[in-house]
Amino acid sequence: MKKLLVLGALLFQYMSFAQEEHAWVYLTDKENVATSIANPISILTQNAIDRKAAHNIPIDERDVPVNESYISQLKAQNGIAVMAKSKWFNAVYVIGLEVDINALENLDFVDHIDFADRSLNAESRVAMSNDKFEIEESLVDFNYGSAQNQVEMIGVDHLHISDYTGEGIVIAVLDAGFPNVDTMGAFQRLRDNGDLLGGYDFVERSDEVFEFDGSEHGTRVLSDMAGHIQDEFVGTAPDASYYLFRTEDPTSEMPVEESYWVEAAERADSLGVHIINSSLGYRVYDNENYSYAPSDMNGHTAFITKGANIANEKGILVVNSSGNSGDDSWQIVGAPADASGVLSVGAVDFEGNYAPFSSQGNATQPTLKPDVVARGAAAAVVNSSNTIVNSNGTSFSAPIMAGGIASLWQALPNASHEEIKEFVRMSASQFNSPDFFLGYGIPDLQLALNIALSITEEEFVRFKVFPNPVTNMLNIQIPTSTEATTLKIYNMLGKLVLEKDIIQSQTRLDMASMTSGIYIMSFKSNKGSKLFKLIKS
Image (cartoon, rainbow, N blue to C red; front, side, top):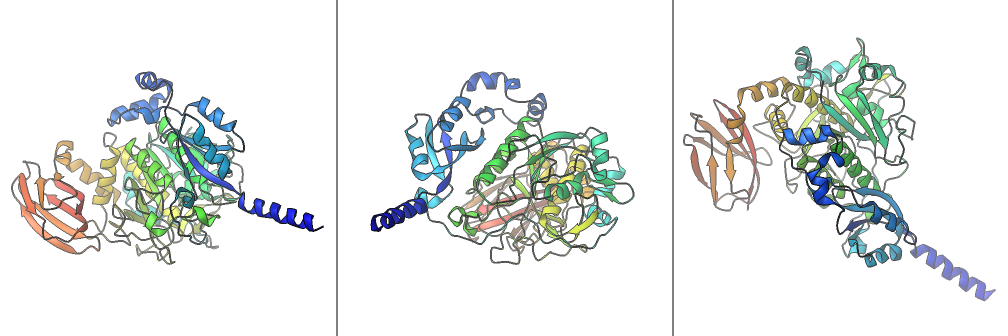
């Protein structure tokens, strides 16, 4: 009996320590890279190739798929389950015992391994409490026709009057489930117009995205862009085209969902998508060893954040909810909204006042966050029962803005995604005095269109500031056709620290006495405006 007790104790101890771990396995190379790049139609759709060509986005090694032979060999290894793959990172996401994952380094095609539990990578972790969707508790009262406020607040109603309703713009929605989108009346117009292009469930590896998976979050999010109920509800881009990608598992919170998200973004890129809307955020996980700390929300740590920045580099305009942590201990914008390439969207109420739950920016983040805001407090949405209700969360301010941007981009088909983002910021209510609560404020998308039409492409790109970061002398170049330009520099709290009139096309500014930190530079002239983020070393 004593021997049995000892054996049982040892077995329990083994089972306690031999838990499954999650990790990213980075691979050494890809197959037929040069041939694939020379013949891009073999790896991308024609729409993707055309979009990249239109905006001078290069096709490079990151567009080449992961070597399927390597994936097959990984699947054959003892105790290894392959959950996701990423061509951008040339990596796969695996689950297995720590010893089995570490054994993968013996394979000659494995470059290195990053465990989700970063303590296994000799790095420390700060554990935080669990969080799920970037969504607050829904309100129970119905509010028919209330989409008017959230549409008019950002000026997209004026674009609709001009027949800019998102036609020709393709949006990928990365979210949880999309139940009943294939049958609901609110999406009848979408289906009849052939604008529901398809989708994929990256969690279950299935084409079925319309079944209930424990959440209707994606359906509600989609409604704020694509929903249309005659005389009762209209989304901000009712005539855009949509792909629906499920990347969120509502039954748990694990870092594999970051890999699902990146994989979906890669799929979106290969399909020629213009805009990604994501109303998801990742900070903490069921296993606290995998959780991030607030200091990790620095624009370059989280896997999903790095993926979002690559999506931006590929010419996709990524819109993401900033998060709902403004009134809890976490407080700051989470991943992937912390990415410098992401347009992060915070929330306001029906009067345009800051919604206390909306996550705030932080001086340690690489760019001002949130970028802009839209209505997210008691926003009108359509649920999976085809009923108009109100819900709280930046989950809804993000699609309201993404749809509005689609309508704007339809009006400016030759603009790049970076130009579109800057026009949106320039039109916002706090453009001259941004802060960590509302960012640049509430955009006026009709004003954004007017700004864009008043600035020629040559004038727009000829505003230059260098070096950036700057230590001492800053060089400023403005268009020669500009008679006078006013330069204003604000700190990250929105305080004006310098104002100067510039009358020469080339100017040098002594920055040696300015305190180190992040600043916003605003140029205004008779020809238009331009905005820069300046880092003082």
